[in-house]
Length: 368
Image 1 (cartoon, helix red, strand yellow):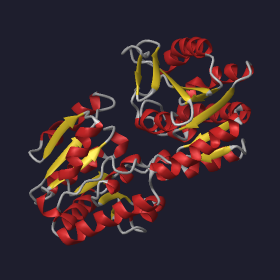
Image 2: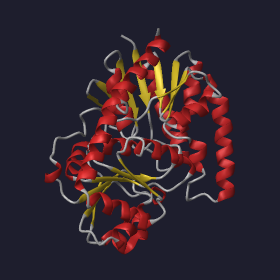
Image 3: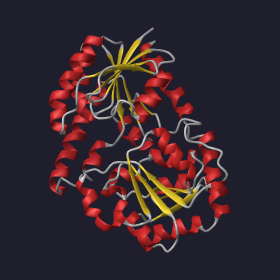
Image 4: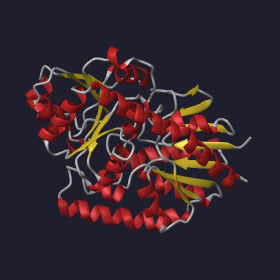
C-alpha cells in the first residue's frame, strides 16, 4: 500500500475539504498521513494518521518561515510516496520535496493573486504589487508539480495555462451529511448564515436587512469573526433582537440548525475572488433542503436560478436582501419547493461522491 501525506499549516485538522473529504476518501486505497499546525497533538482518526508540528504562527510570514520548515522536516521523516499541499506558503517546501524525487500535488483552494486584491489591510498599490509577485511565483513553481487540483472551474482554467495536469475537485457536500426529513411545517422562522464572518462576506449589509424587515424571524449567525475587531464595528446591528450569534459550531451542530431553518444566506460582496467562486455553504444549504438567498453574480445565478433553488440579490442592497427573505418566509410552498429542488440538484450533480472518483483517479494516474 502506498503512503501519501497531506500538509497544511493554516487549516484545522478536521477541515471539511482536506480531512472529511479528501483524506478520508483516500484511505480507501492508501495509508494517509496529515501534517497540521494546531498544538493539539498527534492522533489517528478515521484511519488518517495526524501529526501536529505545534501551534501555528500568528502571521503568514512566520508560517512561511517557521511552520513550513517544521512541516518539511516532518514530511521527510514520514517518507511518503506522494505529498499533497494545501497552502500557498508551502510552495517553497513543495519544490524541495519534488527535488528529492517525490510526487507532489498542489491543491489551490483560492485564486490567491485575486484574493490579495481584496485584503483590507493592504492599500491598492501594495495589493497590486503583491498580487503580481504571487502570480509570477505561481507561474514559475506550479509547472513543476505532478498535478494541480483546483477547488473551482475558474481556478482550474487559470492553472491549465501553466500546467496541463490540472483538474477541478469541487468542494461539494457529502451526501447525507446535512440532509434531513423534517417536515416544512415543523420548521421555525429561522434563517442561517454559516461560515467565516467577515466584512467582504456582506455581514453588515445582511444585518441591516434584518433590521429593516418587519417580519418576525431569527437569524442564526454561525462562525467566527475575522478580524475580531469587525465584531466591534458592527455595534448595535449584532445586538438586534432578531440576531442570534452562535460562534463556531461542529458539523453536527450546524446540521441541527439547518434542520430548523427555512433559508440559507450567502450574500458575499463582489470582490474579484468571490465572483467566480463556488461557496461551499451554498451547496450545503441545498443539501439540507433549504432555499438559498445568494449574491447575483453570473455563476451563482446560473446555479441558484438554473436549479430554481433560491433567489439572487444585489449583496450591497439591504432592501433587496430583506425583500428576498420576506418573499420566501411568506410563501412556505415556494420555499419548500425551492429547497427540494436544491436537494435534488445536489443528489444528481453537486455531491462529493462524484468528486471523490475524480480524486482517486488522479492518484491512480500519478502513482501507477
